[in-house]
Image 1 (cartoon, rainbow, N blue to C red):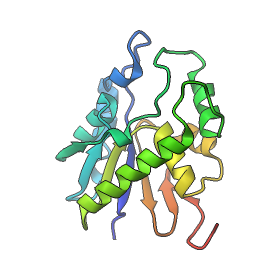
Image 2: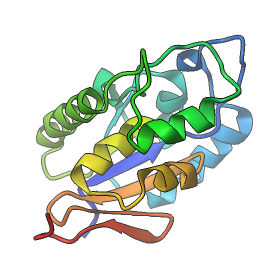
Image 3: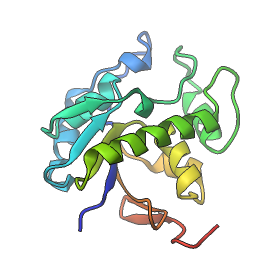
Length: 185
């Protein structure tokens, strides 16, 4: 039985420090890597994406009809490029609050609201969500209880797939199960 929820972390963008990351486009290698995911996406999936180009272009490579949803966008934060971004992002997903960054609670709430809406729209089809790294990690940490959110985020590939089982409160990525089985606190 196919998973009911698959999160797709975007492929590698063409990084341009002079352009806000919300506008980055996929690199040619990123497009090829996204196309390689196609065999791992269930047929007749309901596909929805963050409106940011790198996420949208990733799921467009999968060849499906796509709806966009702002709730799946990346964590809102200052847009200036920083050489310290990876360290700041890792600290954020580990629970540190940064000034001018969207709160963890707000990220989890908006992402969860979007998941609920689109699961209802998907009906009996698999919901495939084109998204980012920080926002789904924060959401998963609130739903699946990731043992180490920072390590999870740091291990995500460009692109990557996360199969989520909401009933069992587990996720599978990079061939590793995460979270606690149903009945855990």
